[in-house]
Length: 127
Image (cartoon, rainbow, N blue to C red; front, top):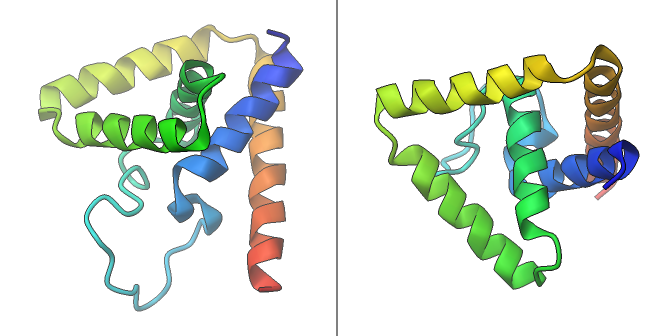
């Protein structure tokens, strides 16, 4: 799979994976949210989230929308049920894989993610 396709897919997965990514600043009085809503905000860095969603996109290639949704829910549950030490190991793995990427690949992935997030914010503002 080419890098540009992987980047596009990773960014698309970001938007499918979590509604909390739509806004980088939390509202002054956040509404009551159900369990797991926006669970990765604050737990993972932008780089870690990018790697996680790239992994999730690869894993869900060829799945139906319902299968993708179920997979994402399963991954969220797995992450939330991890002990602090397991979560630290998981994050360290994401960090090491991110750090192993070439600088141009990191820049492209982050730029694509930022672009898609801005497009999503613009779309949400018009609704």
